[in-house]
Structures are given as C-alpha cells and as structure tokens.
Length: 152
Image 1 (spheres, rainbow, N blue to C red):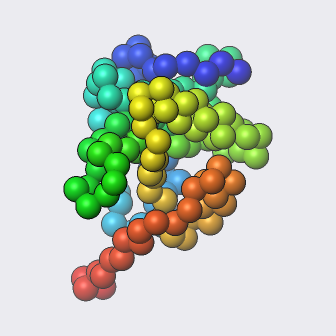
Image 2 (cartoon, rainbow, N blue to C red):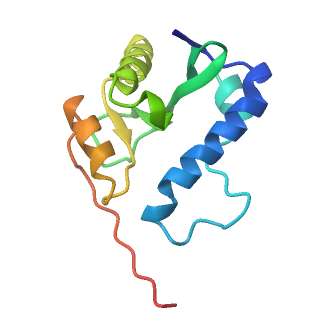
C-alpha cells in the first residue's frame, strides 16, 4: 500500500471514487440527487494551498481517500482557523484494517504542521460505523444538525 498526495492525473479515478461515497451515504439521506450527485470540488482540493487530498493505493487502485482543508472558524470560537476533514472513505473490501486511521493521522499531521490544532468533520447520525471509527481517533460529537422535511 502506498499513501500519497493526489494530483490532477488522479481526477477521473477520484470522481469515480466520489460516487462510491455518494452511494454509501444514500441510505442516510433520501435527498441526495438520484444522478450525478457530487460532494467535493476535487480539482480545488488538489490545487489549493490550504488543503491536502490524500490517496491510499494498492496495485495502482485507490482504496482509501481523505482531505483536510484549513477553514476560518466562527467568530465566537477561540480558534481562528480549523482543519475540516472530508472525503473519508475506505473501499468496502479493505475496511477493518485501520486504513482510515492511517489517512486521518497523515491529514491531522499535515494540519498540525500548518499550525492547526482543532479538527472537525461531518458524519450522518445514523452512520454508527463511521461514528465509532471517528470516536476511536478521539473525535467527540460537537454540534447536531437537525432537519425538517415538510414535503413528505
């Protein structure tokens, strides 16, 4: 296995991998577009100085991804900037091997090198497997987003 920074040459593979993320999250949100749903501006994540997109490969195939983006924090918080983590995904056949931790440790390490010491991520409340994985890394629930759908 090889962990590396994504490049523009990876774009087509990353777009396909993003669709795997969308499909995995579809059961948690009925409002995800049926076709061509996208979550990330992958070219920007690759090119921006305030972000890093990592790929874990095995035999030239992407098996895990993740990014960190340095973002401004809310004025009410004591930290001016934080690291936002996303595109955290491990292909189903590779789960349970600690690969998510490997990617996240590298991303958090990069953030710390940039002077960041607070990190956030979003996870669906019903995605208990992901919540468990993040809690093993020390993450705790912080803010709960609530939704009301009156169209049903």
